[in-house]
Image (tube, rainbow, N blue to C red; front, side, top):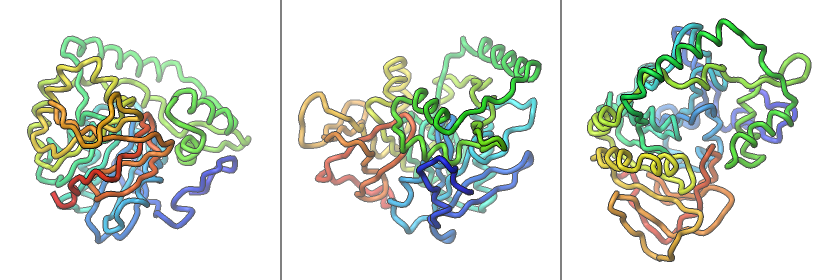
Length: 346
């Protein structure tokens, strides 16, 4: 994939760090990129809502290189083919898609690394196919997204009406200069800075013949899913997860926002992950000083942090520094004196 002319970011494939790939599916292809030796233990990476697999471009090169990383675009974003016209979208469909990818590679077991919506898909997949997932890493998401049963009729109706209007009243795709497209991304995502926007736009824009750009995403991707998962349903999926599980939570991210609105349900859901090894709460600034980890009643590990602009954190993969470009997240440097277990050894 050639880099966009006005972008300051050169993609990982163009720099020889990754290889572009396409996985055949009945409606077209699931596009993505791979890093490393395909004979190494696999790590599948899934991005958040309306992002693309470039989300992981800054992260993967800094992870241990004895793994085979595959990052894919969701259907209808990045370079992946949109779902067929007339079809709807749901978490259930994404779980089926992940199983297609796993079957394509003939993987017996796999580590899953997901951000936001991608993390929620992976939590549901891990509860559906528990024997296939050995480690589950969830960034700024509970691992399953629940709603209320009372909302199901309204959600279904609204989604059907939105889709009907989309087909009955088609609108031309908006065209932007590169600068205008970047300004829109920054306006819609306050946590992103200019370089981070360039990373996502390198795979998130299509250049038109007149030199303008359109976003490389299916308009239907902004519609809500038509199926509601209740908290009880989500808890059953979580209880079925057997993989060593780690949550990484940003103090100003989506997870904390949702938890503030649904604290009791989120706490019950988190408690349902019986295989959870650690939950790291990453903070820009702690409300009180402490030099040692504190274990909260919900199992969060709160760690002293200092303020940095780039993301640096500890995950399953030993102790390392990570500069990640992840939408809606601004994790910060975790005191490198804190020694946490490597999930690869759990």
